Each structure stands twice: as C-alpha cells, then as structure tokens.
Amino acid sequence: MKKLIDKIGEELEQAFVAAGYDATYGKVTLSNRPDLCEYQCNGAMAGAKAYHCAPLQIAEKVVERLQGNPMFLEVAAVKPGFINLKLTPEAVGAYLRDMAADEHLGCDRTVSPKTIILDYGGPNVAKPLHVGHLRSAIIGESIKRLGRFMGHTMIGDIHLGDWGLQMGLIITELRHRKPELPYFDENHQGEYPKEAPFTISELEEIYPTASAKSKEDEAYKEEAMQATYLVQHGHRGYQAILKHILQVSVTDLKRNYENLHVEFDLWKGESDAQPYIPGMVEEMKRQGFAYESEGALVVDIGEETDAKEIPPCMLLKSDGASLYTTTDLATIVERMKLYHPDEIIYVVDKRQEMHFVQVFRCARKTGLVDADTRLRFLGFGTMNGRDGKPFKTREGGVMRLEHLIGDINEEMYQKIRENQEIPEEEARRTAKITGLSAIKYGDLSNQASKDYVFDVERFTSFEGDTGPYLLYTIVRIKSILAKYAEQGGELEQAVIQQPESEAEKALMLEAAKFNGVMETAFTEIAPHKICAYLYDLANAFNKFYHETRILKEEEKERQKGLIALLLLCRRILETCIDILGFEAPDRM
Ligand code: ARG
Image (spheres, rainbow, N blue to C red):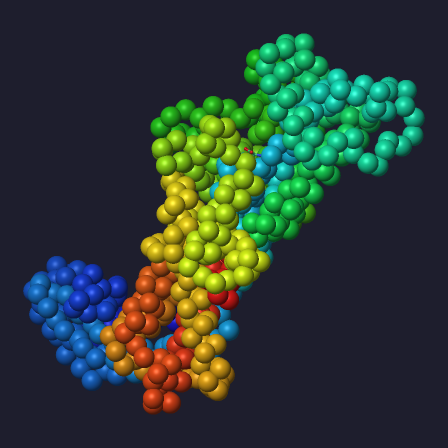
C-alpha cells in the first residue's frame, strides 16, 4: 500500500506540473509546525532559483491547482513560500480503513526476498551469559523479526564461541581434579561415558577457577594451551570432553535465551568452521593473496583511499595456529556454501569493528563472497550503569544475565502488587512479561551504536518512554474492547470512520505512519525507530482516550467506528512489540 505521505506527494507533484513547474519540487514532509498544519511542501523555495521568481508566487500558483482536491481540507501558501497542508477527515479515514483491511497493515512486503544471515548472540561456551551478551541478543532478534515481517528469509545463527583457550582451561582443571577419568587415560579404548562429568553449575565454577590459576601459574597455562592444541587437533578423549561441555552449556543457553524470547535457527559455532580452514588457506596461497611475513601467513587488505593504515589480515600465526579472523573467514566460506546468503549482518560489540573491517575486506579481496553479497557490521555500544561505567553488580563484579533479569522481574513484581489486587501467581507471570519489555525496550529505544545507561528505576516505570508504558497502553485498549464485547458489542463488525476531533485525527495520522516506519527501520537496521514510533503512537492514543467517550458513546455507529480504531491501534502496537521481541499481558 502506498505510504500516505507519498500519496500526498503525488498530488503535489501533479499540481506543480499543472502550474508549469517540475514534478521534483512536489516533495512533501511531515510538518515542522504541527500547530499550523499536518504536512508541508518546501518545493517552491527550492524552485525559486530555477524559475527566477519569488517562492511565494510559485507556492500560490501551486495552491491554486489544489483547490477542491478531495484530499485536502486546507492548502495554504505562506511566507516565504511554504505550502501548508491539512488532510480532510474523509481522506484520513479512508486510508486507515485500507490499512485495517490489509493483512500487513499497509506495509508492502518485499518483491525481491533476500536470504539474510544474522550473526548474533555470540555467547562463549562454558562461560556464563553476562550483560554484554544481552545487547547482541536483543538487537539481533528484533532485526531478524523485522526482516521476516518485510518478507525476507532471515537465518539467525548464534555463532557460539566454542573454539578458544577456555576449552583447554576447562580440560586442564578437570584433569587436575579428576585424573582418573577415562578421557585422560591415553590407553583408553572404545567409547567414553555418555554422561558429562560435571553439571552446569560446576562448569561455571571450573572455568573462572582455571582462568584465574592460569594467570598466576605459568606451567598451568602452558598445560591449558597444550590441551587446547590437542583438542583442536583430534585428541579423542579431549574431544569427548568438548562434546560434554558443549552439550551442558547449550542446554543452559537455550533455557536462558528462551526466557528472553530469543530463538536461533542455527546453533553453529566457531568449531564448525574449522574444517574449512585448510582448503581456504591453500586457495588464498594459490591465488597469491596470502604470503609469509615474519613467519606468519597474511593477506594485505590496505586500500589506496585509507586515511589510516589498515594492518594486513593474519590467517595463521608462525606456529600454524589459526585466529579469530581465520575462523570468521572460514565461517563465511561455510555460509556461502550452505546458504548462499545475499547478505550477512553481524550484531557485535562495536569495539570489534576493526576485526570486521579486516574480515570483510579479506573476504572480498579473496573472492570468498560474490560481488553482490553484502557484509554488514552493526556494532553496538556498551550498556553502562548509572555511574556511567560498564554495568556491574553491586559488589563490582560482572553482572550475570540471569541475575539482571531476576532483579528487574522483582522490581516489576513489587510495582504490580502495589496498586492491584492481582493474585500472586498472575502477578509473577505479569512481572516476567513486563520485565522483559522493560529490558528490551530500554535497550532497543537507543540507537544501537550508542552507549546507554541501564537505569532499572526508569526502565521499569509505567510512565514515560518505557516498555511498561507501552504495555499499559495496550492493556488499556484490551480492557475497553473486552468491556465493549461484554456489553454485547460485536468487534468484527466495526469499520473505521472519519475522525471527529483533533485528537482522533492526530491518532489516525500517527497510525498511518506505520508502513513508512517499518521500511526505514529495516533499510537502516534501526529498531530504535520502531520504538520512537510506538511511543508517539501510545501518546497519541492516550491523549485521544482521555478526550473521547468510547464506552459511553450513545450514537452506536460512531461507537463502532471508535472501536474499529482501537482494534487497529492494538494490532499496530502488538505487531510492533512482537517485532521488538516482547508481548503484552491481558491486565496489569
Ligand atoms: N563470541 C564473541 C565474543 O564474545 C562474539 C562473536 C561475534 N560473531 C562473530 N562472527 N565473530 O566476543
């Protein structure tokens, strides 16, 4: 469905042409002065130079052509040459009726669907999820859902960090604690136990212990590095342990991500890319891209236009070991082979930007991706505490994701209990749903690349630009609709009518922006634009609600129209929050 602003633009273009000017001047924008008009066109000012006449004169001639146009209630040329526009209630009502009749609320799905791989989440196996992983999960999930809504094939891949020193550290610590296990018996024949020799809580304790030891004890670290080398080079016993670590860890991760309403299509990891490394490196050598430099194997990726020198991309260290970069390159090889994506988007901490510049350039130069495959890095900023420093526990430690979620849910629970007679169990459930909205909206409403302050107090508030405020608005709509139905009203028969008040019209104009917002949010991969829209829409709704009799409206046809508007608003709000990755309760 055409965007409302484009429909208005078309009328203006035609008027410019009819008045003897070029159509390009007919571009329309939202009004800068909502007190004066709803939309405006500044084309007369731009045209003044080209046509050697006063902008106001051009504006007046165009306005003349728009007289009697059924789309406009008011068209005015004002100094120095603006064209101010107000729509007729009929035009607005008709647009919203079309929107309501459309399955996707007037948002056209793409005619050329792309396959897009989304690399997000990126937790490291055996290390507990901490708040740093939260942003990637939240932002990535919303982009995935937005892409699907626009009609693209989105493949979300968690890309587990399962190939580092942490594996060697865990193996080493385990070996010290339980040397009698068969994994450490070099003469062990046959199968290894099916059951892991540790639980998730043990595993979570083993890693930090081992990591701390390795920092103090050189020999221990040496041992861990040796174990890492062995597990990466086919040691059977160690690989069996690796499998256990993965299995125990992934079970726990799945539970955590489920609580966050984050779902991955692929649970692949760095280890899956390893088999592609030898062939990839050989090919890069054969084609003359990779060469030896001080014992290491590198690829030059500098470009003439670089203001600062970009260091060569290292593929193999002098001892033959591969690096984070090598793994990401090999992952691209695997993804191209298995999924032929048109695009790969990485949602990763912005401090890794240089790494991705190297990976992307190297992949392009060496032909790992087709010329038209797009590689995009969406770097996100740090989540800070109220002190402006990276978010920590009260004791100053790294905040575990589970604890953060627990804290927020508790805060929400207290608030819900405070002012409601909601039974305990329901209050807990609602607190969970509302808490998730507080966390996700708090994060997503900021532009991803910016750092932001995670303010529990503010995020959990029912007032202001918060998740709970949006949910509150949805719950309000649901409750009116429920009461209307209780009174015998039939929701299905309601059809949107033209607005009768300023507040109603303002709400409708806000609702009408939906398709434009979705389109921009997707092309710019900017979920925060959906948040800004939601907040505006919720505000417009609440203003309308306070000024309008709905359930007490006596004129039944008018009431039906209002109910239809409520139904549409609910659909829009719920569609948007679903894309952002949370949902609304029935009451709160
Ligand atoms: N595991 C990494 C980390 O915790 C993030 C992985 C990001 N994705 C990627 N393809 N490198 O820093």
